Image 1 (tube, rainbow, N blue to C red):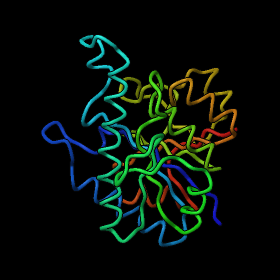
Image 2 (image 1 turned 135 degrees about the vertical axis):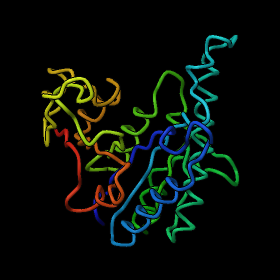
Image 3 (image 1 turned 120 degrees about the vertical axis):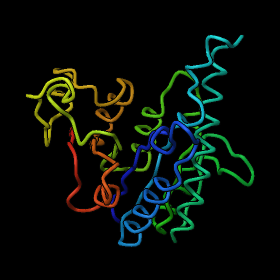
Image 4 (image 1 turned 135 degrees about the horizontal axis):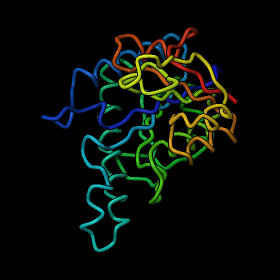
Length: 233
């Protein structure tokens, strides 16, 4: 079986300022992913929930602040169901997997079942985060990538890789094709949150940062000549 790769999608990427879902983006992403799987790739997704709700935005008003995390994790499940449906419409088999089972919506994470789905070419759509407060969906993506034995965590972004400085502020900033985890830490390149980054480093899962807005980028990320910057062990 080909080594699986895990795509980390932000919730914000799936919506607009006016609508929860940008259906053109959802269909493009899922269409490209379905094509990659049909060509032999093995794929999983971890999706955020920021187009619906960011838990941090409501914590200050809650009696129990961690309920904000619970609400954010539920938002990711709504996105996971949308992605499953769009993948199926594009011709791919897909299943939503979460830390806790929700009958008719999400299966509970089970290592053997996930491995069987991947071997059969089914796309695993991970929703619900880690199932615990305080952890971002970046950390959930790092966790799931390690569990499925992914060789790369594909971090879909709005920039085309890791730069030596903010390219919007510094015209001399250079895009890097490759760098090590140690270099990223030493030079404080903000690739992912620290918990996620540390987990990828420990698990030897490379992180690829690429611009998902370019048509064809999702399919290419699962191919033999992926775009972006590779942060490697």
